[in-house]
Length: 323
Image (cartoon, rainbow, N blue to C red; front, side):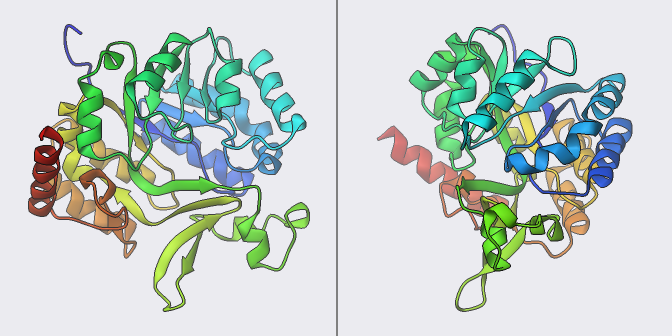
C-alpha cells in the first residue's frame, strides 16, 4: 500500500423493526444531515419484516445517492428456508439500482456473490488471514470484522497481506449483534409463536433488555437476535484503530439522535474534537444507556474501561502476544 486511505464512517443496516414511515424518514434525515460515507440498507434479522420497508427502498436509496452516500444492500444473517434463499437470489438478479453492491451476512450469500465486488458483513466470522484471503479472492473488497476481536487481533490482521486487498471495518457504536437463532425470543416473551408473532418486536425500537435472576441488565433481544445490553462506544480508540489499519467505522442505527452520533465520530476522526470531549457529548446523546469497550481490550464485552486502564490492558496483551 502506498498510503493509508482516509477513514470513513458507515451506518449499518437497521436491526430493529420500526414502523415503515419512521424507517423511511430516518434515512431521509441521514441522507440530508449525517456525515456518513456508506449506508447499509436492508433486512438482516427477520425475512418477515422485509415487505414493510420494500416499497420505500427505491426512494430511500435515491435520496441517499443524491446526497453522495454509497449505498450497500444488506442481506439476511440466517437463511432458514428455500423461499428466503430465493428472495436473495431475486434481489441480486433484479436490483432496484444499477450495479449495486451487496453485503453478505451468510456464507451462502457470499457464494452467490462470488466473482463480483461485495462486502462481507459482521455476521460472517472472518477473523484470520486465510479466511480473509479466500473471501477477497472471491470478490470481497471490504470485511466488517466480528465485534469480539481485541485490538491485538486487529493489529495482527493489519500486518498481514490480506489488508492489501480488502478494507477492514469495525463496529464502533451501538448494541452489538452477538447471535441469531431460528427461534423468535420476542414472540416467546409475549407468549406468542414465531409464525403468529404479531410483530411484537416493533414495541422495542432499540431491542428489549433482558435481566438476570438478580434483576441485572444482561443482554437484549430483537426478534430472533441476541444483542449486547450496553452500547459499544469506541470513540476514544479511533486513532488506535486507524493505526491498526482499520479504514471504515460502523455505527449501528438506534432511536437516539444518530445525526449527532455520526457528527461526534466524524469530528473525532477528523481531529476536530478531542476523543474525551466527543465521548462526554456522546453520553449526553444516548442518555443513561451503559457504554462498553471491553471486547477491544481483550476483556468481557460489557465492561467500560477508561483510557488509562484500556491502554494498560492493551499493552499487557501485546506483551503476551509477543512472547
